[in-house]
Structure formats: C-alpha cells, structure tokens
Length: 461
Figure 1 (cartoon, rainbow, N blue to C red):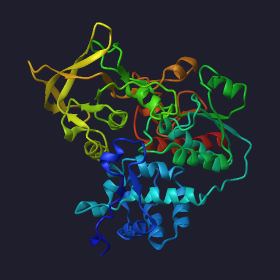
Figure 2 (cartoon, one colour):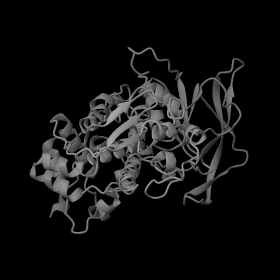
Figure 3 (cartoon, rainbow, N blue to C red):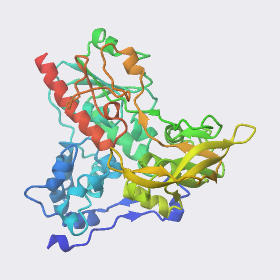
Figure 4 (cartoon, one colour):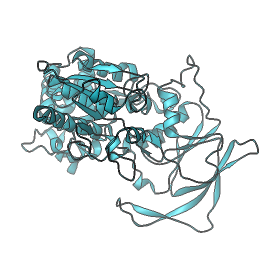
C-alpha cells in the first residue's frame, strides 16, 4: 500500500553551520526522492487537498506526473493555477492547508505536497520549461499596484487572458514582501524570486519600479489620463505596529519590517554592501508569528544572541511549526508567557533591557486562543541591546488619502467583496491590503479571484 511508505525526509543544512550564514536551510528533493514521495499519494477521488489550496491546484494530477517522472507535465498542471510554485513550495503553510487536509495525515504523515511543488517549480526554472501560453491581445490595459504575491498572481492571470498589464512597484526591486520581508535563507532572491518574475515578463507583463501610487501618480490619473480600464491594488500591509509602551523611542528599538528590509532588500548581511544594521550582542524579538521567526533567525545570523518573547504559550505560537523547529535547532531562546511592559535605556538613549511580566492563560479570546493574563508582582528584566517589534502590520493609508471614494475599515484595510471589487468602480483590491497581514498563498488566491472579476468587469463595461 502506498500509504505504508514513510514520508521522505528533506535534506537540510547543518543547524550550527546555517546559523552563521544566509544560505538556504532546506536543500529540497532530488528527482529520485521526489518520485518516491509522490508514490505515497493515494490519488483520492475527492481530493481534500485541492479544496484546501487557496489557488486550487490540481494536486493529485501534478503529483501523479512527478511519480511517473514527467516533470514537464507536472509543471504544466501547476501553471494552470499558480505562477509562483518555487516560492509557494518554500514559504506557504502547507501543514494547515493542503497537507493539513491530506487523508494520509489522519493516522500518519501527509504527502509532502509543498516540497513536491518546490521540486517541480525549481525543475521548471532550471530547465526553462514553464508554460507561458496566453490569449491574443484584447486591447485593454490593466494597472496593478504592488509586485508582491497578490499583484503578481493577478498580473499573471490577466496577461494570460490577453490584457496589457503594467505593474507599479514603489521600491527599486520587484517582489514586494517576497523580497523585503522573507530572509534569503528561506527564499533565495536571485535564484528563485527574480526568475519567477521573469516568467511574467515572458507573458508580456510590464514592470515600473520606484513609482509610489498616491505620490508619483494616482489611481485617478491611471484611469482618467493613462487609459487603464481597471486597477488592482495589491500593495500589501507594510505599516508596522508597536506596543505603545514606555521606551519605544529609544535607540535600538525597531520594527521587524525595517530590520528585515535592511537585511533582505538592502543586503545588510553582505559585507560587500554598505548598509548599516545594528544588532549589538543581545537581541529580543517581541512576537510569535512567522515574521518574528524571520527576524530572530536573521539576528542570530548577524552574530547576536537572539531571544523570542511571546505572551502566550508555545502551543499558541502562530508561526509555522517548521520555522519554530528550525529556530530552536539554531539556538534561539524562547521565553513563553512573557509580556514586555517597558523598554529600558541608558542616559545616552540606547536600549539596555526589556522590562517584562510573567503571564498565564485565561479564557479564549475572539481568535479562539486563550487570552494571556498578567501575574501580579512578576516583573523581571531581560537584558538586551536591540528590541525588534514583530506585532503585525496594517496597510499604508496613502492610497485611501489620495483616492476619492475608496472605502477602508477601522484597521485601515481596503473594503472589498469576495471578488476584490471595492467601493470605487473599476478599482479592485486583494491580499494584505484587504485582509491585513496574512500568507503568500492567500494573497495569491485573492489576486487570482480579482483577475477573474476584472475580466468580467471589462467585458461588461
């Protein structure tokens, strides 16, 4: 029986070695390992994994092709629904989506769908075998704001439909959060992200960098003056949140966004780049999500003793299990049920420590997680030189302020229906700009749905 075959382990860089460099942690499958792992798939008649995938990839079909060794056919199947398989195979939370619904996971280990998707995506890039079929040009222009996962997915689908698509990116590098937010050791930028974007260029997608929509140009000017029939906003959620506690203005307190942007986009980890980044000897990262794991593991690689401080228990950590496991292997300290109350500093304005209190779990909150409750008289100090706040993000309010009729909610997120239509006719939105910070694959799913809605809007306009 196929389900008796044990899950094929993925090869990884040694933990002590990788904690000192920015090379990729996981090596991925080779062809023999991929085919063996693919042979575990039961090819279910009603595949739950497909329904659990936000972009509804035909998972059994592509895995069947991997098992038979027809990697080109596997790539073609994935390309029907995803334009970024090498990226999604690395960073998507498969354990709570496709793999979390795999029937083999009920009594054992699910099929390693993510690792197989990564294998196929990488094979396609290495062999220049990605499908780039597209419809004839239809004469309509669509503007996409933001080159992150939502914008890239939307642009890819629209280009395949025959639209002339232009993506406007505020930064000097394309990729959005894929470039500035996710560390090199999890997602190589030149090897993977840049090559995935090149596939969109082959589809005819145009890219303009250093364009801040709302400042350089406006949505009104795109539609009224430049002749775009519709606009998709996939600008993400890059505005960081802080705790509002005493001492957050001290030197050495930064948001995870700023820290990771310096390290990733500006290559502060590379000695050949003159980008300043300060970690001191001891870094504390406040938060428990994937961004917190990325920040603390980056700080470790930059030479600091690095610690996670999180107000709930380990069971409530929202980060991927794989990332928590890798962080522990690399020597990251976890201080659970701990909540900061003030950042401490010296007379020169530099961080010296983090005053914290112990917490205990009470009743579940609105998210279903048990709410942390402070223990009276439990104050203590964690000594550190740098405090990185990884507490979530919200969308930049610039588009709201510069676009008449664009409705947002109290969190600053753009209000859109399930297909991405906003309160402004011809303007669609998706991804973190609508939901707040979420996952790459959910943003891609929103971008794809919006592409269908835009196509329907233009045809019926």
